[in-house]
Length: 127
Image (cartoon, rainbow, N blue to C red; front, side, top):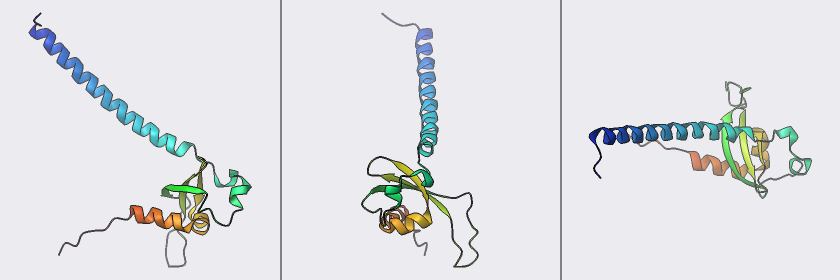
């Protein structure tokens, strides 16, 4: 059975609408995922003392997921000023928590270095 030109055009328009809607759904999902990402982190003060009291977290942490500048970040004026960062941690038991960089630098320095090494970008020499 042959389709009329009108029905073919309508099908094309419908398929384009579906593609556009799917793209919008994907972009909405990405923004929702980002919101979800930051929604389920245990604040530092709420983490069990069994974890906080450990001298080292190196064997307890799966990875550092993200680092962002803290709201109370200090402007670095000289080398002794501290830059405050929020470090998002995923533990091997599945718990996620957020800590200051001072805590994570002391408790899991190797994981912090690993995160920085994985995210460093070098500029190519333009000469």
